[in-house]
Amino acid sequence: MRRVFTGIVGLALAGMAFGQSWVGTYDAGLKAAKAGKWEEARKAFKQAKAVRADDAEKATMLPGPVTEQRKWRNGAAYSPNFLGAYCEYRLGLSSTGDASSSHLRTAADELEGLVNRKQVSNEAVYVLNAIYTKLNANDKRKALAAKISTPNWKVDTEIMSPEELSSTSSGTTTSPNGSGQIVNIVDASKLGTVQTGPISPGGFVPTVATKYALIISNGDNKLPGLQMPHALDDAAILKDTLSNSAGYDSANIEVVSNSSAIKILSSAKALAARMPADSTLFFFYTGAGANIDGRDWFAGVNTEIATDTSSMVKKSEVLQQFAMKGITVFAFYQVPRPAMGGKTFGEEELKTGRISQMQSTMAGDSVYSLYKDGKTVGVFADAVSSVISELHTNAIPISEFGWAVFYKMRRGNSGESGGSSKQTPTLPVLQYLSSNSRF
Image (cartoon, rainbow, N blue to C red; front, side, top):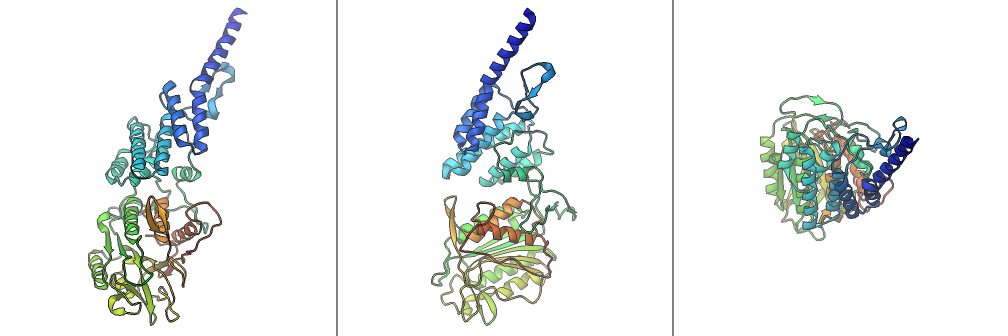
């Protein structure tokens, strides 16, 4: 009887010690994180780590009789190191300037430590890649891709957002029009094959040698009320996004800023000359434009009169440099569309070529901007960049992409339903292309 009593007392004491050690602080960290109190949550996870230092992917058994074993939190992993780093990452996202960079670098150092200890989880890779993208640390992104293979570790994901969990688990993305999984292409320059299946979220997107981009940033034109001071930042954001999340080699991305019509056309000719036949072009134009006598024109940086075509270049002449080589063009225009003589920019349909065209706003409407990360960015450029980053694949289906940009702008890059915006984009108009054609 004495032995039984002693055993019961021992189990009771063990249970008290269990409950009073790391459990309370860990639970406090979860609660604080769910309330968005990332600094408080991080401190709690560090306190839990001081008592129980190492992360564990296997279930933690609660004290009790061997015949009635119970699992802590239904078998969840114990991840104070990962969750502490994740909180630091969220602090970086909610900060600006040097403070943001400092938080992100600290989080990266801690997550790199976990990866080096062979604790390679989908979630750690996802967050590391997001941090490297934010810090423009492309070398580290590539090193990460070379270092990891199949994830071999499970972490506690209770405080991660549903969007993050979706990206790090199934690798599928549901589009607004209901199409399901996206495919991911392996390096077409080496294999020339398409691999269907889930995206590898958060990982390195393979570069495709036959993908090019021409980004024209002409915000400093001289047309009254049509200047766009955010144009240069838009171009920089788009270039980073294409190289980081869509498989475009940075050497294949041409940015032309505040240029004359002659320079725009010569840049298009030079890029088309070095592109192989049957390749793909991402074309983005930010600036003023006009439709004169049924033809769309891009305004040069020196354009002062909206009807002065001598300082403009025909849209068709620019795009035909690519179309006549069999290059597929995916064009996006961030152009104000006031009516002149009953016509607006964007009404011209080209006669030849495989071309997709998407306008940033409806006919007659203007272009707007917003503040993001301490900069002013165009609403359309921001939505295009955000959707590319979220899809994170080198095979972006154009119609699904168009719908995603549409809803991103309508909802102000927030929420999951409804929304209101002064700027509504058109959906892509396809010419000799299918709705799932990819760029």
